Image 1 (cartoon, rainbow, N blue to C red):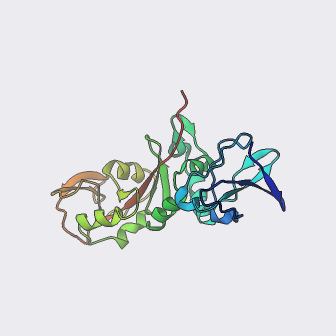
Image 2: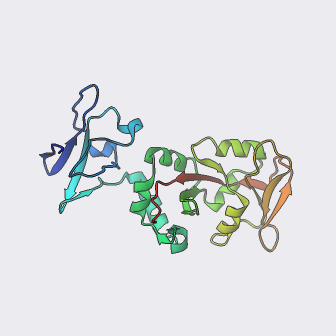
Image 3: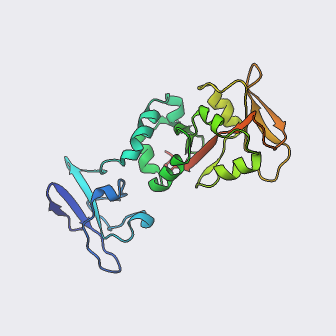
Amino acid sequence: MTNIVEEEGYKFIPVSTPDGIDDEVDDSFFPFISIKDVRDLDPAVEDPDTLGQYSCALISVVEGEVAFPEEDPRLAPLKAKYEALDGNDRNYNGRVLSWEEVVKAIPNVGQMLEGASSLVNVEPYWIDEVGRLVLGDNSSAIFERLNVDYAKSRNDAMRVPGGGLITSKEVQRRARKVQFDSSKMIWCESGGNTDPVYVVDFRTKFPRSEMSSPKASPKVGSIHVVRIQLNLSVPS
């Protein structure tokens, strides 16, 4: 049984580390902590990149239940936008996921926030069919990414973990929910070293996927997305 230390309304679970450090770390350092079972805990923190050097996990206990510490304030805008999505876009395997469930299933929140910061007016798009949270540029981002060739657009999008260009299928789905400029085209993921490449053309009555030269054009821009694979259990 783990020794739980109470101090000033908080409860600490000491975590053993090889170097024997026994610091008490403010919970703002780590907004999300995975704890298997507070009643029978092998003390551990699941994100060694962020927390490996610390030796205690700070939790709060509300009515006997383990509660996650307050969310990183940088998540607040994403939370509001996610909760504004319709149920279909928050659905995975027949169940609508709450924002709290999504956040707990993100393997590395810091990495996700890094990807989100690379996007223009970032928006949650949906949970896709394989359980990924898809974040992307606002549709207006195309005006900031015009006249850049396909290869550079793709490389720029892939600089962050999980990043890439939007696919033609994703554009078609997105176009049912937001308005894209009717005078432009969008690069779509087509693989590397490819000529021609896919674009979606909004200059027609309905968005149309077609092949185009990968060269830069003032009429073609890109939409970047970041796809985060969530650790979601599938009911049997």
